[in-house]
Image (tube, rainbow, N blue to C red; front, side, top):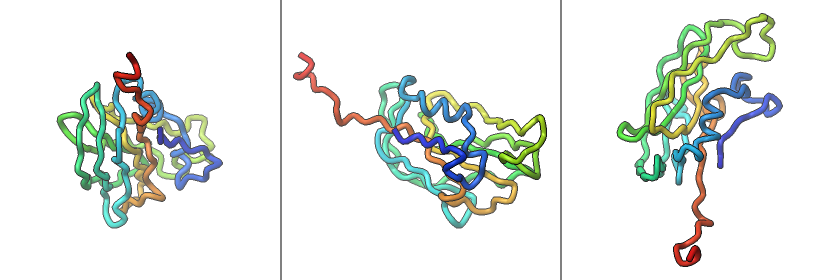
Length: 171
């Protein structure tokens, strides 16, 4: 399992990356929902545009394996305040970016220094049915280029089948 849930002590590029949310819980529990990454599917920033690269690999959704050859998907332009988008592989659709809702704060966004009694709430669009979460992309209001080190957090739940028993072993 490779789902990354950084803590504030890990010093993420943006403090909001260390806040547990529905995407983390969905990714951590996805093996129980029969939606996992089998191999590959790592998401990296393009380093030159508002897009991410997704490595080729396989996902398993409800017992059906889907192959993906790899490619690039576009991340929407930055909003007037920060947001967190989710990169998913959806059966029948392929890889897509599900845009989060901008938090509405333009200063002190999602940081440990927010002094308001009402800190910004992260809002996410619903994850489509039959989807595997691959990564979360933090899009600050000033973001013009997606980089791996700054913007992308790995959320792949990689299922290892290497220790599976054969039919002969089970009988």
